[in-house]
Image: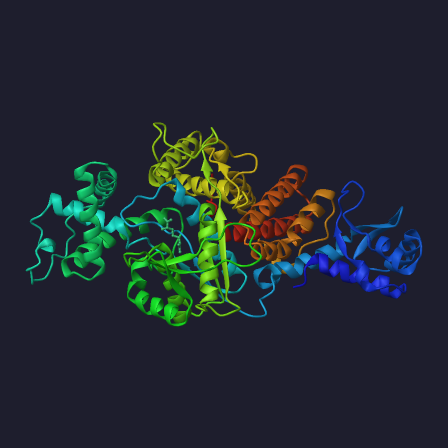
Length: 590
Ligand code: ARG
């Protein structure tokens, strides 16, 4: 379906043409003076120079033609030559009726269906998720859903950090604690146990303990680090026991990660990790060397990625360290190569903290220069800002530690459960489920309503409020509509048609609904879930304004009442669709 603004521009363009001017002058925009009109067109001002004619005269000519148009109920010329326009109610009604029955509310299918890999989440095995992992998961999930909703194919890949020194650290520490395990016995030839020799809690205790020890500037610290590096090397070179142990670590950790991401309503199509490309690194390195892309610099293998137009420092992209070890870069490049081979995506979108921006620029340039990707493959990094506490510095626990995501969510759930149980008739079970949905919306909307690149303050009191620009307010609006619709005994079938709006607030609500497809296209083009949030907030406000001044269920004229209810249903459906794209949903009651 055409976007409403395009249709209106077309209509006004026709009028310019009929009046003897260029149709491109007919571009219509939402009015920046809503007190005067709903839409405006400033084409006459540009036309004045072209036609050497007073803008007012042009505007008058066009207005004369537009009086016949079915799209506008009011056409006014305002000095020095603005066209002030109000949409015709009948025209709006028809547009909304088409929208209501069209698939995806009239969003156009793409001309070319793209294959897009969204690389997000990016947790590291055996390290618990903390609040820093929230944004990648939440924004990434939404970006994936936006891409999908637009009609493209989206593949979400978690890109686990499962191969680096942290694995060696865990193995080295386990070796000290449980040397009797068969994994450490090089002569062991039997089958290793099915059961992991540790639980997730042990694993989560072992990693920070080992990491801390390896950083100590003592003899013990140095020796331990040495041993951890040795373990990493043995793991990577395929020592059987180490691989078996590593598989246990991976399995225990991934089970726990899945549970955590499930709680966030985040899911991945691929659970690939850095380890998956280990075996293709030598081939990639050889290719880069053979083609003269990579050269040795101070013993390290690098690819220059500087361009003449650079104004900032652009260090070369390191492929191998001087000791031959691969790096974060190396796995990312090999992953790009692997993805091109296996999926041949048109785009890859990465979500990480914006502090990795330079890093991704280097990697993308390197991938392009070395032709790991096709010329028209898009590589995009969405760098997001920091989650801050109320004091404006990175969010921490009360005692200054790193906040575990799981505990943070649990605490918010508990608070919400209390709030929801108070004075509401709900079973404990229902209150629990409702609290989960509401707190998820609070957290996700609190994050997604910000432009990704901006830092934001994680203010759970504000996020959880049922009023204002919050997730719960939006849920509440949907719940309110659901409850009105439930109270009505008859059938509410949108396909039977909305009626022409009768009040200002009803019309405004309709006009806000009608911008859905334009908004969604914009959110996709900019990869900006915050655009969807802003749309929903405006829609909820428009609905609530309408609701407060309209008798709906007590309306005596049955036809009118049903018309209102159909409008409500459309609002509900659009809201729930937006929520789904953002990755949360509304309960039945709250
Ligand atoms: N594991 C990484 C980290 O903790 C994030 C991975 C992001 N994705 C990527 N393809 N590099 O920083």
